[in-house]
Image (tube, rainbow, N blue to C red; front, top):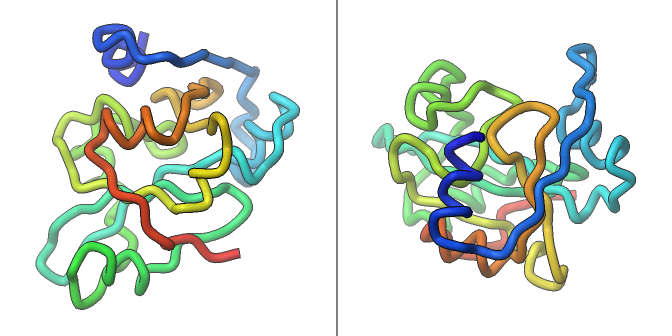
Length: 156
């Protein structure tokens, strides 16, 4: 059980866990999850970490079919600019390995932003904290348990 799933269980949040056989050679962990679980890729979200000019780490949850708009994330966070975080710093702050970073149950509570494209879906899929493990839940439940704000931070 990962910290993400422990958190959801502890707070009795409605969710479902989905697992699949992860291929270490997969080019994109998120697209691999969508393909192996036979999901709409727009409904599967990846968790990325960015760093502001002041060194604050931010969590961005965006669709696997797009990319993170760093300018939009910086704007949403009230920062001047943002860049992708150092992978080692991301792993230290979250307690998760790259490719399995969940927005839930991180070691440090970081400011989190979810792309607003998640809101129309009844449920979305995010990493459950390990490669090959996804959790399905509503975007509102994800926002509630990460303290996230919705913002237009994704790019097609």
